[in-house]
Image 1 (cartoon, helix red, strand yellow):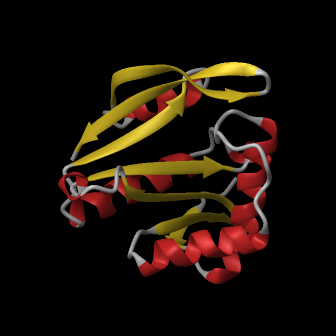
Image 2 (cartoon, rainbow, N blue to C red):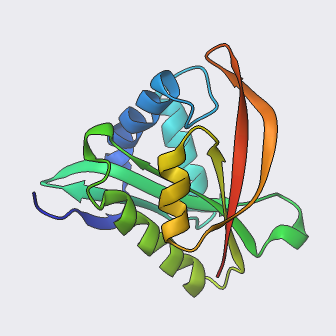
Length: 165
């Protein structure tokens, strides 16, 4: 298998991003949402990120988008402006094949260039693969919020992990 390439997302990538996102909404606790997004909602998300100069990266393999990553504000108040929260999603058939690694390396690089102080991940506690993935990049677990989500008829805990940049 060839290695994927990482690049800035364009409007043309929105359908692939939507497909990855909706798969996770419908089939996992990776996203604490119930309803699949529409193309209009995903386009609004893309435009809002772009207008605010937040990066959206895609990983491409053989011309197909197989993952994406982004970051944005951790919280809205001014004192949090040096802290960001990120997301990395990889299409289910391409997990464990360096796609997520490439996206994370580039997100961390961009965050450091951007002068951010810390990067935060909120991860469903049952997603042990994501916790371990983040640990490999130096993220440390800083806390668990118990039963803050409810999906698939069960309560969900969120593990927060943090990387000092």
